[in-house]
Length: 67
Image (cartoon, rainbow, N blue to C red; front, side, top):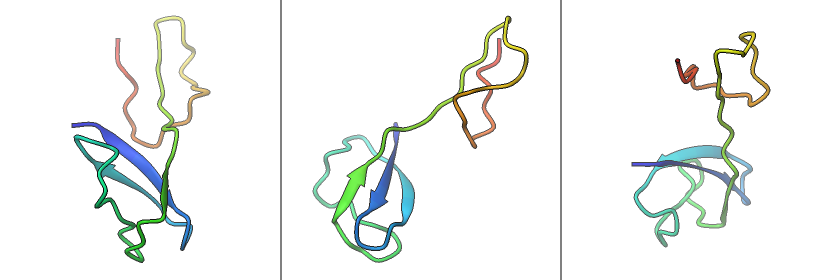
């Protein structure tokens, strides 16, 4: 199941949800309950054998992609 990131337009909370369908009508902010939210473009990190260990993608998940 994919993880989608959102920002709440009411309280500016940034949160992530595990959802089958990102267009679900019942998606609401876990902080204030508002449904006035916007889906964010998720950041991710990739590495390759030529990578020096640093990433410009910026991910806080700790997953390096391995390889």
